[in-house]
Length: 502
Image 1: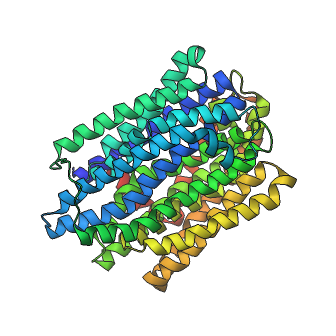
Image 2: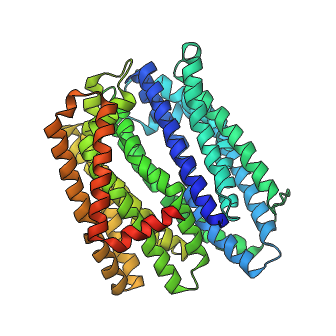
Image 3: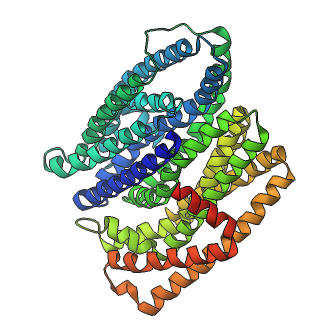
C-alpha cells in the first residue's frame, strides 16, 4: 500500500475520532453549563482561535505548500533555508501578537462585540486573555501542519488536533467544579502543547532540519509576500463573517450565540473531516500537477465528485434527522428540550453550507494550486459586505435564525462566483462534465430524503429515544442512497467504492 493511501486511511480515521471527541466535549459543555452567559462568552473567545487557525491552516498553507513543493522538485539548495527563515519570522510575529492580545483584550473584545450582553462580557474577556497567552503555540501547530504536508506526512497533525479537542473535554469533565467554564480553555491549551510536541517529533524524523535562520532569498521572500497578503486576507474572510454573526447574535438574546454555535458545529463536521483528509491530499496532488493540465482537471473533477457524492446526502439527511442528532449530542443536564428546538431551527437554515462549502473548498484549492490567490481574495472579500447587509436587514425581524440563513446565502454566492471563474479557465467541457455528474447525484439524494422522512412519519419514531431514532433512520438512508446511486450513477458509485477499498 502506498504511503498516500495509508495517509488517507489514517487521517480519515483520526478525523472521525476527532469529531467524536468534539461530540464528547460539546455533550459535556451542554451538561455542565447548558446555554448560558458562560457558554456564550466561551464561544465568543474561541472565535479568536478559529481566526488564527484559519490564517495558518488556510492562508499560510495555500501559499507555502505550492511554493515549497515546486522548489523542492527543482532541487533548489536554499529551499530548506527559506522554509526555516519563514517559520522563525512567523513565530516572532505571533509572539508579539500573543503579548498584545493578552494585554489589550479588555479593550478590543467589547469593541468587536459592541452589542454584547453585560453578563457575557467578563467571561469573553478573561478567556480571550488566556487564549492569547498561548497563541504562539496555537499558531505553531498550524505552521507545522504545512511543513509536514510538504513531506506527505498527514497523520501527526490530525493527532495534534485530536489532543486539543480531547483534552478540552477531559478537563471539563474532571475540573469543571474547580475552574468552571475555564476548564475548557485550560484543557485546549494543554492538548495543543502536547500536539506540538508530537508534530515536532515527526518533522524531526523526516529530512527537515530546523536552524535559527532568518535570511531568505530575495525572490522567494518577494513572491511569498505578494501571495501571502491576499491569501491571509482571504483566509480570514470566513472568520470575519463569523465575527459579524456573533456580534449580531451577542446582542439578540442570551443563548443565541450558543444556539448558532451548536448547530454550526454539526454542519461543520462533514466539511471538517473532508477538509482535513481528502481535500488536503487532493490539494497536495493538484499542487504537484499544475504543469500537467489533463491530470490537474481529473484530480479537480474527482474532488468535486467526492464532495457532492458524500456531502449532499448528509445535508438532506440532517434535514430529516437533525433534531434527533441535536437531542442525542446536547440534550442532558442543563441543556433542555427547548434548547434542542432552538438549535434545530438554526440548523435548518445552516444546511446548504454543508454542500456548497465543501465544493467551494475544492474550487478555492484549485485556484490556490495555480497561484491565483488574488482572484480568490477578490471573490471572497465581497462576502463580508453581503453577510453584513443580510444580517443588518434580517436580524431585527427574524432573530438569530436569520444569521444562519445569511451564512447559507453567502456560501451559495461564494460558490457560484467561484464556479464561473474556475470553469471559465478549465473550459465548457469540464463544466458540462460536472453538471452531468451533479444531476445523477442529486436525484438519489432527494429520493433518499423522502424515503427517510416517510419512514420517520410511518414509524412515529419521534416518540423514541434519539439514539434509537438515528440507529433506525440512518441505515435506511444509507441503504437507499447507495442502491439509487448505483443505479443512476454507476461510474461515480464504483469510483467511490474503489477509493474506499484502496
